[in-house]
Length: 143
View: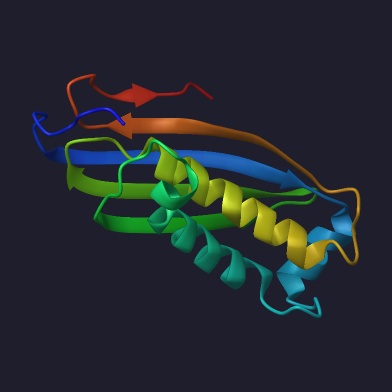
């Protein structure tokens, strides 16, 4: 692991986004909450939050962090669900991996809960969209 001991603690924030593409009937079933496994987006939100908190347990060289805020939000569209995860911390290292991990776990959970009705789903476009804090300065991906 990188030694972050000498680094200054600052407010750090990261936003990751991704999509899971699916049949329109699957998107409709998610919106209607008509899947047998239950509230897909509610469960995916909890999975994303849990993933952000456990990132250092899964990604070998990530530091364990005391996260101050995690949000995972969704927008159901005609052929996909857009996912956005936002993570914040006051600390000596960034939270990019936590945001990306949250987004990925949320997408995987949607896949798991919908696979019985749609085997053609595709998870994609997971990327870091924003990062603030630390000496490297802010980062923002252009749309």
